[in-house]
Image 1: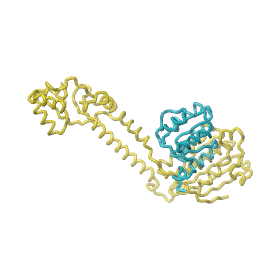
Image 2: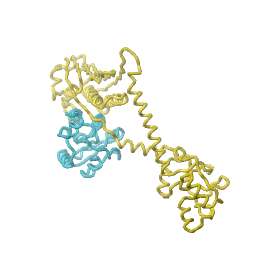
Image 3: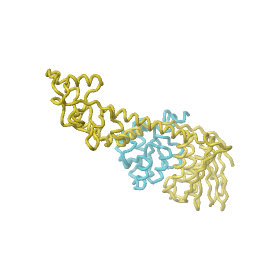
Image 4: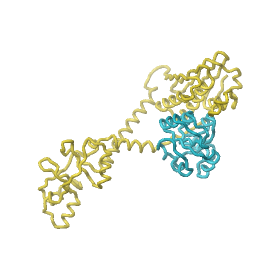
Length: 126
Length: 317
């Protein structure tokens, strides 16, 4: 499933430029602790979080994540969006809670990185 | 203390079709029409009979031709015009009677995108190409565009391959008893806006050198966590150093204070001394050193209060 489809079905607001929306999403991960994201999220995953400051972009860029979904209507400031556009990490926002977003992603078949058949499995062969 | 363990962290390399689309779009704007057009143009004279034109088209296996009079472009005629003439039994009519006189042309120095737009708008099979003085210099079909784009893509691809090959074989090309590439990054304390920059630059350098995605990920995690520690915990910042060798990467993070009182405790997952405001940003989960350990083949961690902290990690390639 592509990011564009996810954004449409979850009615997410795209806050960055129209780039990388047609990339295939490999799975998902949710956490507000950056170190946990560094440890668990996998390339091509969507990351669902409450965090909205500049450092989420650095984390997503290092891991080559597909996108960041910022929940509960948290405000994303301009420097964060600017940096995200620069390095090509789409940021989408929603008033919904992380729980709701993850639930709906699961319904759509986006697997958690550590689920059987999820991107963790596929990428580590574990 | 030294920790040894075996990480198995495979990341599958994925193709990125988005990039290729962008590349193609880029080319359409970059390439000039003269680079993709057919330069050897078969032309006919307005006085030629349709019967002769038919032979010219057949012999050259083309479906149309510009009409030149004294070197000047006066019209264009296609196989459709020939068929219409045949239908009317007008095979001995002259080209000038059946040709299209209001000729749409392209300029040789225009970008291919102009041609794409014009083809789309007019629906013609071919368009004559002229220079700025109006002289016919070539002819362009949609097939020419496709071929030109493919040719350019292949050339770019080959250049990229050569480039990559050279970068990834740098160590083999340089003869020494021990070759290493040292990258140093200064990390400022409390500068969260720039946190991750050093790790990101190091990651890009490794990709340029042709490192495998698994290795790149491990280095990215280690350097990001080490950099974050320098930002959060040090009094005056520190230095992140990466020494890239053919068989391993050594990452060293050094600072000059404040130092850690209980190193064992600091290594426990979940233990953190970060203040609340930093934790609210999602840092200070107490997982940094565990993450580093999980991604390294060897880790040496030393600290002394009032002196500083030194972390050394080895990742074997």
